[in-house]
Length: 283
Image (cartoon, rainbow, N blue to C red; front, side, top):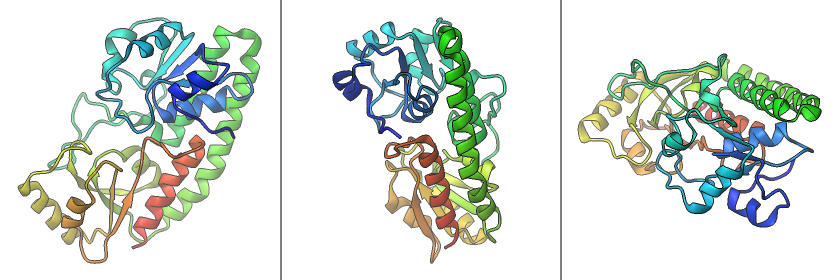
C-alpha cells in the first residue's frame, strides 16, 4: 500500500500533479487511493492536521480545484470554506449527501441530546459509510472514464471486503467488554461509537480548541464519577490536563485522531481508532 502524502508534496514530486482527482481531507484521500489503485493517485487539498472547518484557500489551491476532473469533499457543513466554490458545481462529489449514507445529528453539550437539523460530519468513522463512499467514488469515476469503470468497481469491492474482514473481529471484542461507556473532550466519535456499541457520557467542549467553562467541568466530573467512567478520549489538539481534571481514579486517557494523519491506509486508520478505544475501555 502506497503512503499517501499531502497535496503539496504530491504536486511537487508526482507525475500526476495535474490533479485529475482532488480530495479535501486525509480520510477521503485514503479511500480514493484504494478506489484508484493502479490507475491514478488523488491529490489532497488540505495538509494533514489542519482543520477543515476554517482553512483559507491560497491561489495555488484554487488552481488545483479548477484543474481537477473530480473534487471529492465531505460537504458544505464540514469544509465550509469551499461552499461558495463547490455547491452545485459539476465534477464534484459531496459524500455527506450520498443517499444511503448513515447520518447522525450533532449532540448538545449539556445533555447529549440531538440537535434538530444538524449533521455530525465525521461520517467516515462508520465503516459502512466508508464502503458507501468508496462505491460512490467508483461509480462517479466510472462514468467519467467508462473504459476504467470495471477496475474502479473491483478496487472498491476489494476495499469493502478488506475493511469488513478487519472490522468484524474488532467489533466482536469491543461489544464483549463489560464496560463500554466513555467520555470525550470533543464529541467527534459518535459514528465510531454507534458501530462499536459504545455508551456516551458526554464531552467537555464543542470543539477540540475550546476550553470548557468551570460549571460544565464540574458537571462532567460528577457525571464521570457517578457512572464509573474509566475511558476518556481526546483529539491531538485537545488539552490532556483539562480531561485529567474530570477523570476518576484509574481512568485511562486515550488520543483518537479522527483525521488519520499518521495512517498509511484507511483500514489501518479506522481500525487503529477502534483498537485504541478498545484498550481505553479495558481500564
